[in-house]
Length: 606
Image (spheres, rainbow, N blue to C red):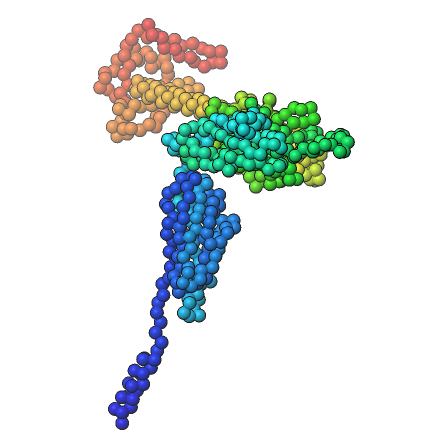
C-alpha cells in the first residue's frame, strides 16, 4: 500500500513540473550608429537610432543646443530634446546635426514607457546610450584660413552700375540701392578676398529679377575653416510712373519729431548707421530688431553674442552702446586695450555679482562711466585704488578683471572673493554706551563719505567687524620683540658678572685663610686674645677643629720682653696648642695710651 502511494505522488510531482510555464530572460538594448568621436566647427553628421523590433514606446535624444544644431530627424527639436514614438517593426530613425561650437559634448539616447509587442509586459526603461564628441576650435588650427570677406561687390543693370549705399566695405554686410521702374533685372558679381574662401550661394545665381518694391539679394561666403558670412543687398524698384498727372501735387506733411530709440540719463539717443572708420576690430554689421519691432543696423562681435549700437544724441554726437535685447536696456561701450588684446566692460547679472563688495560706478577718463565693485573694507586693506569690473575679452570669454585706477592698468582677477564676518556693533540705544562718538551707528556722528552706513550691507563699516590687519602693526610687533631681546641680554650679562665676582671673592677669602696659619684676633676686650688654629697645625687629636680657643690673660709688656730674651725653638709647643714661633726681629712695639684708657698696639715692619 505504501509503495502504491509513493508511486502516485511521484506521478503527480512530474505532471506539475511539466505544466509550470517557462520564462525567457530578455535583454534588450538601444543601438546608436554613426556619431563621430571627433568633429570640427561647420561639420554635419547623421546617425541612426535602432530599437528592437519587438519593443515600442517613446525615444528621447538629448544634446547641447549651444554646440550642436538640429538639421533633420523624425521630430522637431525643442530646447535640446528630440522625442518621438518608435513603432513595432519600424523603429530605426536617422537624425542629422551640424556642429557650431568647439569643446566636448555628448548625445544621450534613451527610451521610456517601453513595452513588448507580443505581451502586455512593460519595460520601465532601456539602458541609456551616451556618445561623446570632441570638437576642435578652428582658431587653434593655424593652417586653415578664417577669411570669409568679399573684396568687391558689383551690381549692374545692363551697362549701368547700380550705386550701393553705403559704399562697399568688406566689413559692412548690409547695403541698399534704388532703381527705376524700367530696371527689371540686375546682375551680381563678386570677388573673394581670399582664394581659399568659397562663395557658397548668391540669390538666383547672381541674375536677379526685380519686382516693384523691395528685393533682397543675399551672398554667402565660406572661409576655409568652415565659418560663413552673409552680405545682404536690398534693391527697391520704383513704381510705374503715371502717364499724365491728374491730381495736384501732394505737399508732404512736415516730418513728425523724431522719437528717440532710447533714453539714457538726460540724453535722448537715436540709432544710426555706424561710420566705416569707426567699426571696431572683431565686429561685423548686423540687423537688430528692437523691442518695438523696429529694424536697425548694429554691430555683432564675431566671437560672442554681444550686440553694439551706434547712437547719436540731439546734438549729433555719436558713441557706441551695448544693447541687451533680452531686457531691452543699454549701457556705454567701454573697451580697454593692451597691445593685441582688449576687454569690453559689461554689466554683470544679479547672480554674478561678487559677495563682499559694494557696487559703485567708475569713471574711466576719456572712455566713459562703467559699473564696478570695490571691497567693503578697501581702505583698511590699502585697496582703495582697485576695482572689479565684469568684462568680455578679445577671445569672447567673460570674467572678472581687476582695474588699477592709479596706473590705469587691468589684469584678469583670479583671487577668491571672501565675505568678511560682520559682528553686530553697539546701537545708539545701548545703555552701556549711549553717547559713544566712535559708534558708527550713531546718526549724530558724521564719518568721511557720509554717515558710514551701508543700507544694503549693514555693519559693513562697523569697526567691530573690521578684520585685524597684521601688516599695519607688523613694525610695532617687531620693535617690541627686539626691545625685549635686548633687555634679556642685559639681564643675562649682569647675572654672569655678578656670579663671576662672587666666585672671585670666594677664591680670595680661601687664599687669605691659607696664608694666615696662626692669626690672633684682638677684640674689644683688650685683655683677651683668640687664636684660630690652622687645620694643619692644630692638635693631632683635634685636627680639623675650627673652634676658637680662649688664651689666658697675659701682660703685653712682659710677653714682649720674654720674647726678646727667650727664643723658643721650632719644635717646642705649649700644652696642646699648636707651636707658636716668636722670632727675634727688628719689629718695634709701641704701646700708647688712648684718651679712653685703652691700649693700642701697633706692629711696624722695619
